[in-house]
Length: 260
Image (cartoon, rainbow, N blue to C red; front, side, top):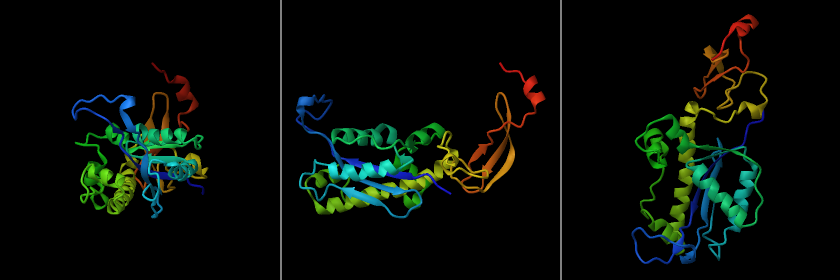
């Protein structure tokens, strides 16, 4: 059975370097920018595959030229049916698209985006929705790395200086973000409303969980809409709920059912 290609993704970008006159409440105009941002590195993995894919700019003669890295990232996204990223809709995907068009790439084939930040905000009221907080609370065995050896901005600053140790830490940090993000997604998946329907990719010949693709689903009660009654299912793998697409109302009930 064909499964959708689900890519877990995280990028790290270089900062914008600019000439400024102060450190507080500074408005930077376009002509004050000396070096625009670009992508320093990315880590990715196919859902369920233990291998983590990683590329960075550490060996590039011109660190600002990210065309080779973007070509590798374009190929991955062109294969993906679904992309999982934390703050992906506002940051990662838009940043990636910006670098694609600036480097002359055409759009990759369309894919759906699952943004774990937006899902956490929509379904829960956690104290913090940052990846470091969510993974610390929900998947502490694989929580986000804090790159303590180069705390805060110093990691990016040292990478820009070409510090080999900083680049090694960046690789560990970026890879761990993807591993912890995958675990977080799996923890949140059953709760997500509007998750891309995995069954639409698999052409199932038996009831299939629309969230994880498992056929281990059981009938469990009914779900009611404004106009219909449907068989309700619960997945025994991920715990997600779903319903059948065909109403089980009789014709007589449908004819007598009034709506507002």
